[in-house]
Amino acid sequence: MIGAVAVAFTIFIGSVIWAANTGFRHPGGTLVRALPYGDKFGHVILFGLLALLLNLATGCRSVRLWPTSGRLLLGSLGVLAFAAVEELSQGFVATRSLDLTDFLADLVGIALATIAAPPLYRLLLDGADGEGDGDGVDGEGDGDGTTAAAAPSPTGVPDSDP
Image (cartoon, rainbow, N blue to C red; front, side):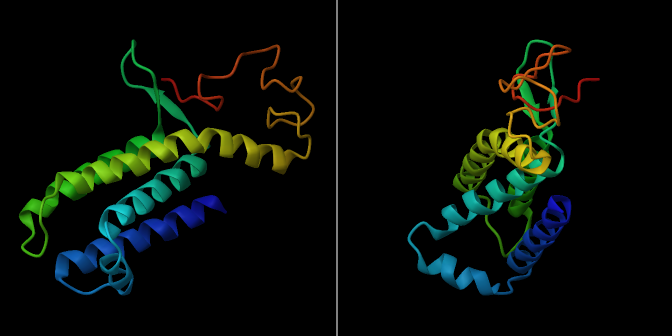
């Protein structure tokens, strides 16, 4: 279900980008332009919500890019790459302008989603399994999110280590 919502929201964001690139006035743009800093809040909300949905849809899977680095959620990493390409491409579109503060607002939204996704994912798992013991798995764990077999990843959610 969350995957379908993530796909639908991605299509919506695509329509907003298409509208901006072609000079079409997207209906949501009227509200955004009417609010002080509405554009920046829009970036935080749109990219943050996209990252949150993709993190939940991927089960909050994470990767380690370098042996000494921390883990990064795949959904957040994908949205970060998308935001960077989308913001940089604006420099080549006549109806758009390249704006570093837009990208910084994207980063704020992605960072908030990265922080919120793991506990929200665990909460959703606990609600789905009906046990409420904190580990998201039926009949396992002692309420602290660990099992005898393995300790959880630093994010508390499944890893995607190669």
